[in-house]
Length: 230
Length: 230
DNA sequence: ATGTTTATAATTGATATGCAATCTTGTCGT
DNA sequence: ACGACAAGATTGCATATCAATTATAAACAT
Image 1 (cartoon, rainbow over the protein chains, first blue to last red):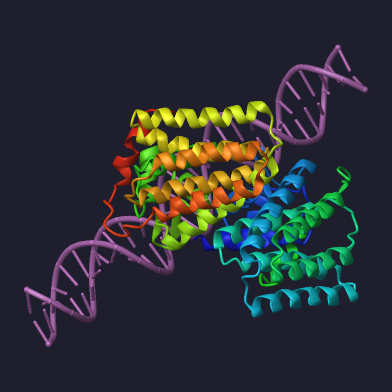
Image 2 (image 1 turned 120 degrees about the vertical axis):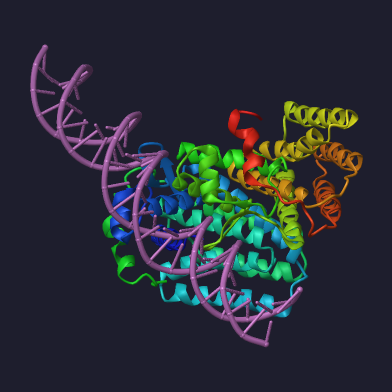
């Protein structure tokens, strides 16, 4: 694949997920080309990639912007996540090896530690990571990719809300979910997943406007110096 | 969006779905640029779009080819379809208006007619169409788009197999599914969906090699003259 | 004749530049 | 204050070019 445009789209993705590039931010082709020292053609390829991921919206003759999802889209994204994870849960339930359950529990512990240390960014990342880990265990790369894309979009959503999450409640859900799955209680596990996502999306009572405007040039500056800052 | 590259990727998508462009076919940038009378840059954008849809595979410094899914991928795709449709079924069950059920039943009838008239291509299309209609009723455009993408990939899969389908059996499944959903029997509906897709994928006992090589130039010729041939 | 190496051609990845169409902006006049 | 208009910026696309890589063909040795 187009190595360079791939790298660039990954960098921009990171910037968006880490809330450095906020929804609505203009992504001018020439500006990005200058920043990354590439031609406009490469930038365009990266932007197309991003727009198909839903992170960027391209308007004809107007340019590309970091997507600004509506509340409805937020609900749809979480419904889609619910459907995928319910399906994975049904496949996994009772059928996973010991190492699998252990990895999931380890994940919960890590997030617990992050919360104790008040490392919000890390807790956030681990929160999504739990769901990704769960889906990875289905060993279905098609489902996995769709799910990863949805998770990226939820990161975008979190840029739009001020809501403080009840991490403890959500974390308890994760813990309980593992128990239910290990015991083979599929229906209850699925219901828990639905409630879990519903809780999250309900926490998104939106501050639709008045989000600070970001400038692509300065937001991306940290990524340009050393491009391997995970 | 890039109007031109969009049109081109749609045309190529149609050509692939209609089995005019077969898996493995080389999609040379210059050739496509000549065919559609556009620059290579536009072709590249279209190819990137297609590769993210899974219909085209790009190999670095080698070029783009119509994807040649493995059997494993086929299973993953149908598992993903199962998960999505089971989720939609759960949401829809008992909760859809009369017009909705009517539209689904009409779909089944149309396909019945197509089979009677031995119009295989149409029956094929309507077969996928039923699933798409079902998902559309969820009114979740995120799920809808993911599902549509999977359906496109199943069309690719059908290029790889000789299997003759038992259309009657599959059609009966569709009919029965409507009944189950209307009666609110979620679990049974979900099981039927799983079995249905399993039946299909098991029909894919592959003729991995020896598929006739197609040439992009002649395969796409019909689409160039009049670009609105649905 | 077969297999290996080498040289040539073709293709991709990327850049630079130019241009028309469109959008944004800022000014001006009312 | 408001709308019309002109100047400037940006996008979308085309063409031309170049290095790097890969594919193909020819020359060579076995």
